[in-house]
Image (cartoon, rainbow, N blue to C red; front, side, top):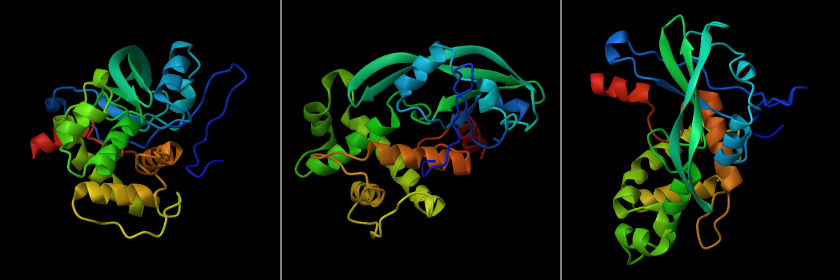
Length: 254
């Protein structure tokens, strides 16, 4: 079993089974009935592998939700709904398509929830590893270059990554990696390395290296990054990067 200890089995019907994150906070009815986004941690090698399995109906959602409804904790309270589709952009290598996201309805709370693969980031169309790659690229090539110049000259033009996007990614990624270190101690290999440096990008690079993730020119560590993302979702029930709909509702209500 891998170090992020995800229980994935294949049944005799060739359906992919798995587990998902822990119970989620359900906003009150006055919050507008917005769909709850639950992290779906999984053993797929990429979001495209997930999408192929989804379309081929090889994901056994009854097994995925065998631990109980993520909203109320009851068994069998949910029914599946028509999936929705969202655009996804991957830069490793470049690919852009719409993928299906599973949706369900909890009869007890009368709330809709979706299972968003943790390879994605809530409210971002770019995959998590693409976002981290771009920021590590900015670290490696950033001396004397602005984020806008890096986006224009070094990132795939069709991806539509801009300097503004790069800047908007820094805070959620740095905050996510800060949260991951104490949570994942003993569960993933964290090298003995002091985290810090001048500025947030330097901190991001240093923290990534402590997880075995290195940026250009010899970018490597996609597997290690995936382990960090999957493990964090499994242990905490939350996305490593970004804020799902229910967290945004709670922040707006404060």
